[in-house]
Amino acid sequence: MSSSDNDTIDLQVMNDYIAQVLPAVSSAQRAEIVDTFVNIGVEKPCDLQFIDESDLEPLMLKKVQLRKLMKGWDTGQQVPASCAGSSLSSPSSVSHDTPGCSSSLSDTSVESSPGESPSQDPVACVPWSKFPQELITEAKAGRRPSPSIRKEMVRIIVDSLFQRDRPTPRIKVLRVLAQEVVHKYPKSFADEVDGVKIGTGYDSLLSQLIYRVDNLSRQQKSTGKKRKLTSTPEAKNKKHDAYGCVNWQPLSLPDGETEESQEEIRKELQQMYGSGSQADEEEVQRKMDLTYATQRAMLNQPDMVMLDTTEQWPYLFVHKHMMSHFKKLVDLDIETALTESFERRGPKLLRFFKLHPESATDSKVLRATLSDVDEACRLLETEMPRVIGLVYLLCAVFGEDTTSHVIDAKEVGEPVDSGKLPGHPCLIAHGNPLQTSSFSLSVGQVVTTRLQNPVAALSAWFAAYYIFNLHYPTDAAGVPEFIQRFFLGINPKKGSKKKGTRKSGVNPGVLKLANQLANFENEWGI
Image (cartoon, rainbow, N blue to C red; front, top):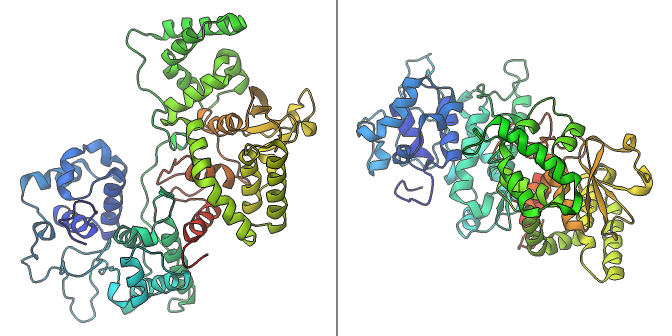
């Protein structure tokens, strides 16, 4: 990977730069710093001039270390040799010609006396030269290698880490190796479907590496104890509920506004809502926009009560204003995004389900659901049934209960018995869920918004998770996360809206389906 190529991130250059500026930090810390650089868009050391210390706060480095890291490039005193296009002058330095040297690379390679071990972790490299020629050929051609060849690559990478009686590789090391492989050959290895990157883009390869390391660790008997993957403590993430948002809590009120004036506007909106159709819609929208920060302040309170919200901000549950709030929160027009994604990605998804029903947790349910959706489309002479049908199909694939997301009104009664509703957002279908155009949204067992078409219904259902800071249900998180990542393109590299999920984890079922779709309709199949 050339350091002069501005279109790629040269992990070797970044690692060397950190090692020279901060020689005291451990290899694991260097790996974490590199990972943070990549996440915020730094591609080479000179890009550090465009960031400030707050961007690197999650690293929990000391202030002096942060300043050294950021100022080292500007002074011209710590330029990595691989950036300058030459080798390090010190004979003890690691060669920059070694392909794929990654996160645990030491700044110098000091020979140890007999009986002594180096004080730092050994070099961890992607062993490109050991890979099968078939894999290299496919990667250079931008094609995805067969699953068997990919597994062989994983085996070679991990086996190389266990040579010379090395300690069990850290997750930080595996992450940077997976990252390097994907950055070098993204078309062949990235977690990407139809241009949509899933999570970090290298989660599935990282998972394969972790599982391989874990299997080898269990087989080792030298210590008599099971050895586990270890990782350095990570900095605390931002509040979980801000996941995927760009405007979760504005820091200030609009110019000229005070808490008192905001409260007056809130009361005016209550009165306007009570007047029904007589309210001026443009004025309502203006006032809702003006009070967005105050709405978020209430919604972000840990003890927020849904009934209080419906009373104090009734327009927040009107579909139009709900969609407007979500757009400010996530910077996405959700109805437009869903419609466009259905048109572009829906057909391929349906072809995959029809040709490979065995990919589902329950293939019989998947086949029956496909038949029901086709029949509804035939009866109504429209493709609209495929919208709610998507939820039903994904439930069959992930093994989730459909009533976690969509409930027939017959099952909860008319008027609705709130005790039969789940606490998380769900849709109530007034009629056959695949054929009706009439839905209601339930949030926190409170029936709120009436919706008049499937796209509006699915949009409101998904938006409610973000607007009201709600987790995906533990036993039914696959459907909303797949829609989030695949159809809406909301792909944070860390975190999850499923409670209890590890910070960097993409739902395993979602990741599996994404990779099956990426391999679908190419020369290898699935």
